[in-house]
Length: 345
Image (cartoon, rainbow, N blue to C red; front, side, top):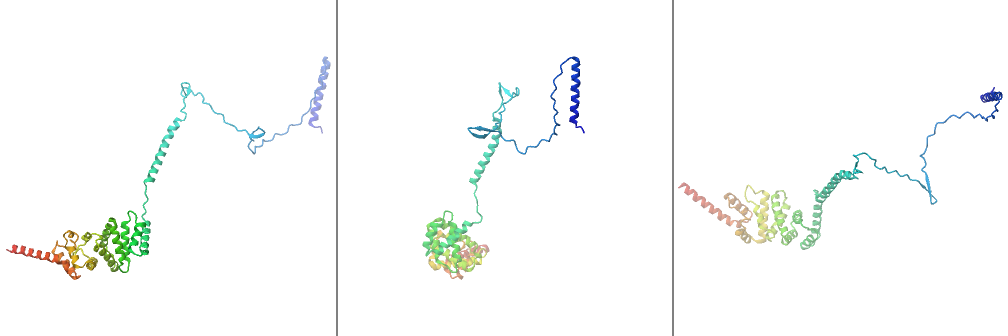
């Protein structure tokens, strides 16, 4: 079987021979035999392969070292955009001024917010409603009083280490509470309270306010606490550590006086009588400068209240303190009798 290449070669030979005959008949020289070579059939094209990796970055040799060549992006020059883009032959660019104007508002807002935050952080105060610092203060005061040998040592330690400005009131109330918690009255607390009152006026005012508040809630105290508190305040009154004006809030009448209040007044006057005696106590009550302090305890505004006070002091064994009240009551009775006689007449 003849291959296709052989067929093509025989056909070319025939063409060449025919050309030679024609040239010979015309008297022309025959051309040299062309060197025609048959090429093999072209190979089928293959699909291009996808690059698996990025093209390597061209390298540059410098001073014997291979360095990677870095590509710098070309800077684009502003194009001539017409009259609107140029003014006076120069491009009308704001060179970032517009951006600054746009950003300046945001920066100002941020600065204002930072300033407000700083101001609030400086002025803001945290209030601790749990009063943990007061609990710690009371514990220190209690331990100091229990570990002291006498009231002088306790007063020195408390004033030096624990009593800061503004804590005088809390210290006085702590002394009263500790005294009330004792099984029996301890003279240590009375002497300590007296020392505080003589050292600072703030302590004196604090004990006076504690007297008023204690009398208002005296009905909540049991007999032991009531006795201890009464003896503490009686000691302060007898030593003139606190003012006698604190007694102005005690009203001797059937409507205002409670059973706990009567026990409080009874114990207080018995303690004062023991410390001073009836005569000296009567002089203090009869002092004209002290009448404001005893208006409630020895009332003269109403005969009914006067009789109630006379009967009360007589029952507790202090009838000698009611001499002035008896004289006042007799005068009131005589005045009423005269008015009645004038009315009948």
